[in-house]
Image (tube, rainbow, N blue to C red; front, side):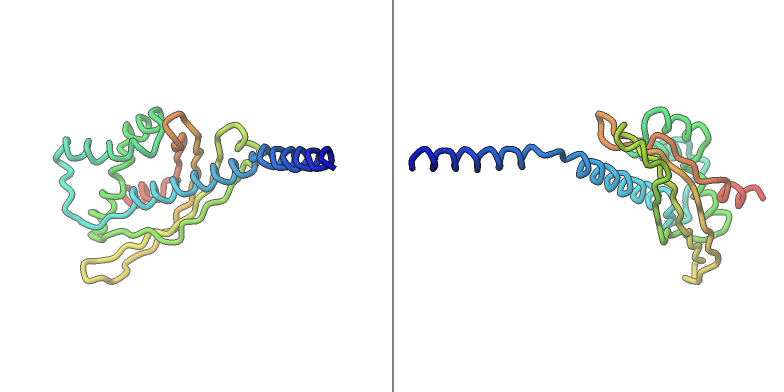
Length: 175
């Protein structure tokens, strides 16, 4: 009887051990995708939301500080590439030209490459709407933006390695 009890205890312990050691790869993949989407939403909201129209485009130190705030979202290479294009200032310039504040609505992400997640990278297509509001609080314009981003898992956390939003805002600056 005692041997049966010991055998039962070992069996239960083995079952618990095997259950605890099961492959959690799909959970990691889901967590990575969720982290990538969260980072993308935060970046888009931070980049495109313009609450005030008193940005001083002549103050190069202010522009540099403003751009450097986005370095936490991007890999070093992508940050340098977008900074060289003055990409981070474009929403401010459009808001100034339109004399409107900008808010972001309806951010949606969709994976477009199913096979990359295991390699620590995910490609996402994003769509969102920019709402331009004048000083009286009236909606002046709504612009739908489509783009893509690649998010990678780095030793410093999840970062955007490639970001592209088309030429929509640039077209508004230089029609």
